[in-house]
Each structure stands twice: as structure tokens, then as C-alpha cells.
Amino acid sequence: YIGHFNVLLALALLFLNIVLQALFVMTLSSLADSDPFESMVGILQNQRLLNGQLYENMDRESMMTRTQQTCSLRSYDRLETTVEWVSTYLDKSTSQAQLPGYIIGFLAMLVWILNVGKELRDCTETLVVVLMLPPTNAPMMERRATSRWHCLLGVPRANKVVSIVFVIIPRLVIAVSLLRYGLLFLAGTIDVNDILLNAVALEFVKQVDEMLFATVAPPRLIDFSSGVTMRVATLQDTGRSWTLLDPMAQPSFAVLRMVGMALILLLSSWNLLAVKDTAQRVYDDVCGYDTNFTYTFHPQTGLPVFAHVDPSDTRNSDMDELKCFYASQYELLRIRAGFSPMYAQDNFTLASMVDGTHQLCNAAPFTNPPLDCPERREGLQYFSQIAVMEVENYRRSYDCRDQDVAFFILRQTCLNTTFYDQSPQALSFF
Image 1: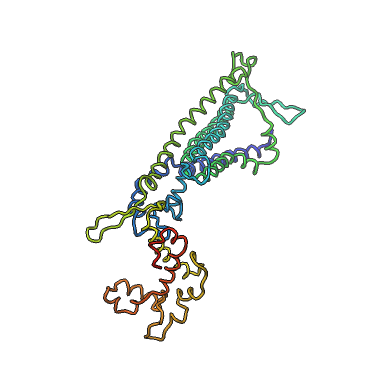
Image 2: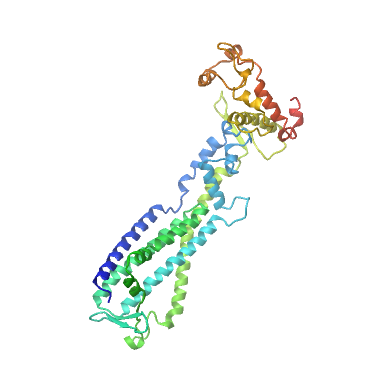
């Protein structure tokens, strides 16, 4: 009907499609992780306790521990990205109302079951039709003169076996594999944005056969394959009481398909619940329990000593004073990098003193400059010198004098209303 070349081409496309979809299934199985955060449970807890609560890692501007910054999404690193994913997945964020990630994942899995279910239904109905086609010595085709449709009435048994073994069974295996690994893939996706992207990617994998055929096949083969139908055996044809595709049996099969879909969705939801539980454990390891403390190791005993840290507590005046001091350190860094100050107006003279270009910061060789500026003319050597400098040596050095530049920045920072209004008595000496 379509020529020997088109027959060979159709067989080649069939083999190529099976290979491509098998490769996609293998790729999907390697990417699917039923519980992506299982390996992180415990590890993130250790990272939080050893690094996140450590006093040396506190942010000196906001006076927040590393853990508090991470859980409030005010830092930028891999741990903060993980916490952002988990908090969005569990709907811990209060900034905007949205569906939790596991609900979105459940909806994506439902859509994927419906999508692959259509493919499974087509495969099973095709299998039943092929099995019920009357065996003939040669393919029997009924051509309709008024349309392009052709009706296949019967085929030899050998053609049935070839169609079932090399066409229908591979389609069923690939469809079941895509269903299984696709559900694992969606259940193990923790990033809400990636859930939608992965669902689209799975649909692309399922449509590879149709895209391949539409791209390579000649128009005659496309037109013929789209216009062929197979006639289902009826009571008059076979003498049986009913057939699997008899219209009277359709309601029962519809109920069976709904029950099967519900069972698949229920079983796959166990993976989703496991991911949700693991995500909750990861979130608790990083942001759960008490995060309002910091610690350092006592230099004599080597044991940790603790201090309460709560950025939301407005009654802690000691913390306000520390905020003022450490904010001035950050202000120095901003000015040296060329940014505008946060707590004062731009001052070119002050900026030149910080970066060491002011004339008061320079002096002739072997003499001290009139003003002690933060920029050191010794360069990196100065860092190694002060690292081993003892107290007595510091007192005898030219560094031991008024730090006018730093003190001026400290004063204008602490007198800013951001800090002064919170603790005016403690900062009144400025």
C-alpha cells in the first residue's frame, strides 16, 4: 500500500524511537531521586551548630548569627539557597501566599499520571484490537473511495506477533517506565520552580516518537498512517457473547481505569510524603528549635560559653551598642570600597583619608604621617607584622595613637538616629 521504501523507513524509525526513548528512560532513572535530602539530615545540623551559631561568624552589622541570617534569607550561599527551597516547599515563608511545594508536586504528579495513562490506554486498546483481528493469509484493507480513511480487517498471525513484540510491548514498557521514573522525578523535585519545568521536560520525552515521525517520515507515509483504522470484532463477526471493546463494556472499563489511576496516585504519594518529612527535618536542623544564641570557646577551658542573641528584642541595649560599633566597621569598608556611607552624607575629604590619598596620610620616608589613616603604606607586610605583634611592642609603635579617622566614622554612625534613638543614654558620650 505504501511501497517498500516507506516500509523500511517505518521500521528504521521504529527502532530509532525505541532506542531514543530507552535512553531517555535511563537518563530519567539516573536523575530521579525519591528522597533528595535524606543524605543532608544531620550534616546540616552539624554545620549549623559548629558554624552557624559561632560568635566569630556573626554579622557585625545586623548583629545576627549566621543561622539567623540564613533562616531569614538574608545571606547568599548554598546553604541559604537550600533553606529557601525548603521553606518555600513547606510554605514557611510569610512574605507571600502561595501553595506549598508538595501540593504543587502532587498536582504535577496527577497531571503526569493522566498524561501517561492516555498512552497506556492507547497501547492496551491497540493490543486488544490486534489480538482480535481475524487471521488471514494476507493483510485485508478496506479502502473508502470518498475519504482518505482505510480500515484494516485482518492480518496474518505472523504480522500480529511482530506488531505485538516489536511495537506494542515496547510502547507499554516505555510508558510504564516513564510513569514510574517520572513520578519519582517529580516527587524528588524540591524547588517549586523546577517542578513545572520538569513536568514540561517529561512531556517532551513522551512526545519524542511523534516528533521523530513528523520530522523524518515522507508525506505519503504520514498521510497513510494517520488514516488507518482497525476494525474491532463484533458479535456477528466472531460469535462471542461480547468483546473487550464492546460499547456495553465501556462503563466498567472506565471505572477500572479510574480506580487504577487513584491507586497509582496513592502509591506515588508515599514518596511525596517521604520527601516532605525529610524537608521538614532539614528545615528543623537548620532553623528549628532555639536559634537566638551564639557561642565561643573559652580560651582557658576550651569549652563553649553562650550568649543570648535576639535581633527582634528591643530591650537589649547592649546589643544596640554593639550594633553601633560594628556598623561603623561596615561603614569603613563601604567608604574604602567607594560606596556612599549609609549613616552620613558623602564626604570626599573623609573618603580620601580612609583610602590613604589625603596629604595628611602621607609622609616622607622613615617618618610618620601627621594622621593615622586606615590605609597602610607597608601593604600586606603590615598584616603579617600585627598578627604577631605583642602588646608592649604595639605601645611603642607609631600605631599607638589617636585613631581620628576611625573615631569620626564611629561617632557619626552612633549618633545616627538608627542607633541613637534606641539607646540615647549609652551613646550620649559621643
